[in-house]
Length: 477
Image (cartoon, one colour):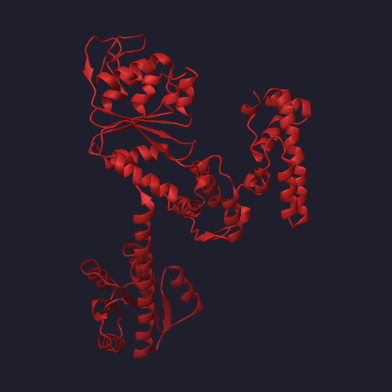
């Protein structure tokens, strides 16, 4: 509840009778009221004192009231403005509302009218404050160092990070691509005692094979062809802080051995140097491939695995946290709406249903791309079904329940559940289309080009169908 005695109102009008009427009516109601006669005086008052509400005459001696309205909303967007005029027209009223006025009144205006309008404006201010409070509470509960989630799975992740962060132990983060492994690493760093030291993130798969040793450990001038100057490596740059190694599974064996030595001995040599440097770095590694399987296959060193996997953190895929989809979507449409200067207020139920049913193989990264596209395609202030990417609309979620072998029980179940003839036909046709593509890919051992030639279809068209049915060529190699 807003305390009326704390509400400050500025009346801008050069008519002395109006000034007196408004001042008397609002003062008796308990508001703090100031009165000025010109636009320049009003701007000086606004600069010197905080006001909640401004009442402005459209016809002022030094500046047009609408120009003043525009200036006030530009400088003080949270102030509510009421426009009054003795020469009211529909065009003037429309323009005032467009510029952000709360309401438009035509003189003569009684004391009761001005009090009622001010009350309505305070109701709006009160509602804004409540929404802001709820958003703050929501962000406190569902946001954690740029990570979002109200699902039980994500709340568990937040709790684990709080436990993990204060220690000096190395951490191994596992999760599918797009689940936010780097954000989790940043959150661990931000919650740790190392928060004021560097956080260095590198993608191991993006490092060139010939320079990866130099990138990690640094090099001396002249250490190899092209080494024109001395350079610090990532490990030295992260000294005192955290080094995040994404896609750690892609490191070749020789680099794994060097990294193991750094972790064990806390010492390393830059390339081409005999000098020994000490390392005070916390290592956080991430992978979307289970390292224990690579250890069994001899593709990842067991001793390095145990050095990194002192503490582990699993990032759940988006399909297992359905209740977070709407939170992410609202967050991203606000972000991209501001970026693209679009006022997007929400999403219609049909579009929301499509998002809820999608399996999100690309996780949060895929959802983010969908949001950016939807904001760009939206015709009005709502995201509608037609604004979503075509592949979401074309891929009937029912087909996701059919495996690559074509489970007849699943097919019969889906057909019995489907009441719409067109949708049932799509399920039936989709089943055989998916099964046919899988058979040809099996024969060509996953070669999309060869499969497209045998089917008599353009390669991009086949790739679109594979994406529609979530068929991965790697499954047939």
